[in-house]
Image 1 (cartoon, rainbow, N blue to C red):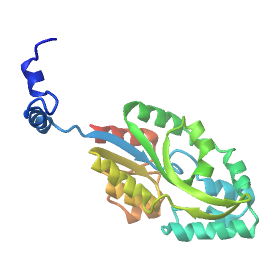
Image 2 (image 1 turned 90 degrees about the vertical axis):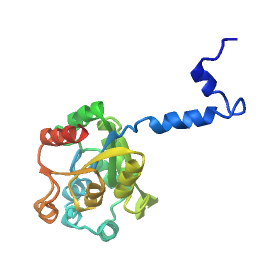
Image 3 (image 1 turned 180 degrees about the vertical axis):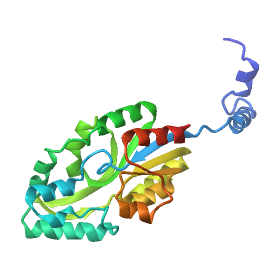
Image 4 (image 1 turned 180 degrees about the horizontal axis):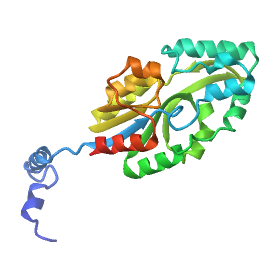
Length: 234
């Protein structure tokens, strides 16, 4: 059996002597903590078209064009959408058929591919699992955290938030895990995420959002967004 080196002697299993854990604790305390970066992005309006606008255009129901760019109260927005769907007898399958025709925004897939080669990326969206699959497939299956619809016989009767303020809570959790978080979004429902992040960036946000939140840098192209993110990563 090989003779223990001084380091091996100090790191013996607890019970062999009293020094092993003490030495390991000293080593761990002296090691610098490595802060890694992670990027969180909204999906609709950043990487893909707005699903509800596409449904409005396909069905000819202009009220469905209202999105989180227009209404900061998400529950009010969704209750209105559910009432409209019910009034027009629109089913989940009707909406999924529209989603199946959508493609990522021009340059969105390429931007995401390059970004994922540099840093971990998580999509934080207030969309729903039943909507997202066709778009995720085209984006190369990035990680998505979102919500879920309550469906009965193909009729959308309600929606379930995974947690309240899920975008902000996710960013806060990443920060507790010692991540440096860079976030990008375009709408009112992204502001809490951008505020919680170490670096928040507005991407192709409408004027009303940019005017209300002028402290966030605002960019219009994927090239400028990539530049901002690379600078933030360091």
